[in-house]
Length: 367
Image 1 (cartoon, rainbow, N blue to C red):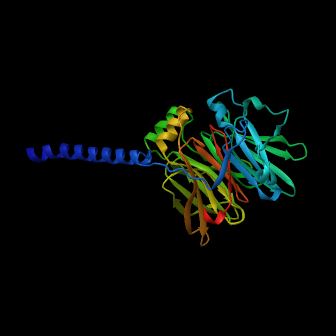
Image 2: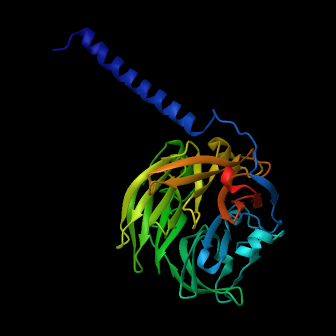
Image 3: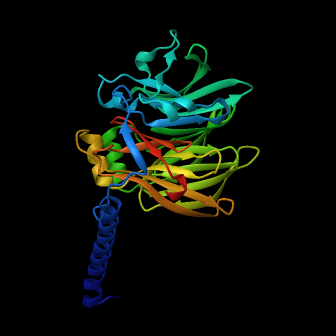
């Protein structure tokens, strides 16, 4: 039998445990929101904004074999219907020489563009045939739209639509073969306010999906805000950015397209989309320095949020790395950088709710 002292001790102990957990949660939440961070503006070279029409250019697909890069611009339409959803294309020569930015791609007349809001984008190139895979999130449902690109007519010809009940909050896509691709579900829910609650509660309800040509499978659950995806075909690595977990997870892709976790790169900032340099294997990552300003920016787009680009030099077959910061801005140059593209010393930085920025890096080895 417990005495009075013991009976008084148990509720006190429970109270202290609850308080300790609450304090731990509060500290982790404040650190996640980056209240302790600032930004120091610096550029790797001369930077300029692209033309007004290149607005909301946020996801990039690079195809070295075809000397082409595609950009999707759809997120801004979700915020404001006055913005048009578009896909742009850059030739490598245009990236290096253009003063106006990429060209808009023509869409198949038989495809319903009114319900097309392009997000994540990836491509597969084989025997001169270029297939583009685009995440479509029009607010009603989410699909993956598959197009064939006609270079002579600069035209996307719609081939098929992929849908699945597993599609809840798609963001990134990485093609690993013909009609074989990985996808990220960033959240469990689709509504913006419930997604904000998931962030606030620091949940890990995100998932990694795989389409095998016939159906969609869940590859991994329990991920915290899985976002960007990119496949390094030369090294067989799949890179996955976990935005509010502030890390990039690295997987090796087997011949049967199964995944094995190789390592995890902790970057101490919130990574968005990732670009792999096809020649060096270096990663270029668009990041968000201050998370609470990022959240405010998506709720109230007029509020500025800092942007950052990291370069991660991968060494020892991806087991070690060196991280540098070629670009940082307080949000007035570009707000909320979401994607980055590198080509022969030219860097293009995209944003979901702002104009893209292009920088010329004169001494690439120094950044």
